[in-house]
Length: 129
Image (tube, rainbow, N blue to C red):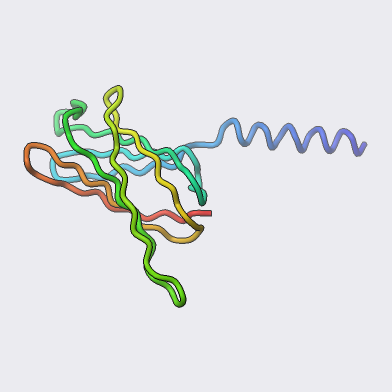
């Protein structure tokens, strides 16, 4: 009976991991619709891959923008604020980057999109475990 219970527990755990969804956020940034997807849900301390899709008002993919991902954690007692940024590279109609959260906790993420001399931003928060 113990073996059956252990096998079932492993099976349920494996199924849960197989169907776990990415962390996703969809927001408007000026004339653009921005979909941000992270490969871990919830994001973890350490490296997390991020994929950004940008579409114009007509639904066409934007592939000629400069995209920067800025992420930060505010200062806390005994700890200074942490601020990082990374460039997202264009690949296959999407922009890809890796964010490296140095610790768990509440982080702010700001995706900056620069195109034709104008910059638009999408801001959101994540709880890193």
